[in-house]
Image 1 (cartoon, helix red, strand yellow):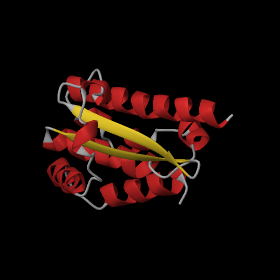
Image 2 (spheres, rainbow, N blue to C red; image 1 turned 30 degrees about the vertical axis):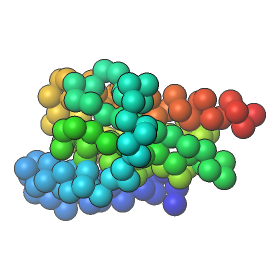
Image 3 (cartoon, rainbow, N blue to C red; image 1 turned 180 degrees about the vertical axis):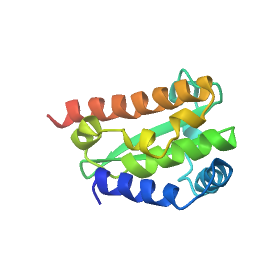
Image 4 (cartoon, rainbow, N blue to C red; image 1 turned 60 degrees about the horizontal axis):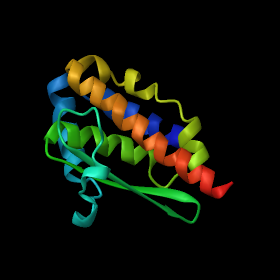
Length: 140
């Protein structure tokens, strides 16, 4: 499934909820289903800088697609990284690099996060795209 299709699915899912309390609960549930990072990758070098909570992300290239795993010590943050991984995991590096992330605004996520969490969200996207750039360079 393309990044855009996954983003549209997420927009649709979030539109089913009437208020942000329900959306936060949904994000927490998504975080529970997150493909968890192996403990060996819970290292300082895999922590996303710029997040108030600890967020670890690991990326591997498999069949020219990046597979992400992650974890966080905070439930909302875990939900946020789960959404991003759902969008970007199992995608070609070039597709991740070129991906538009305006779906985050469409689901209203950024405006309902504290400023520190919103900064963390930007840092997460930046880090996932940096992995994609690194792997795209390897593929060239």
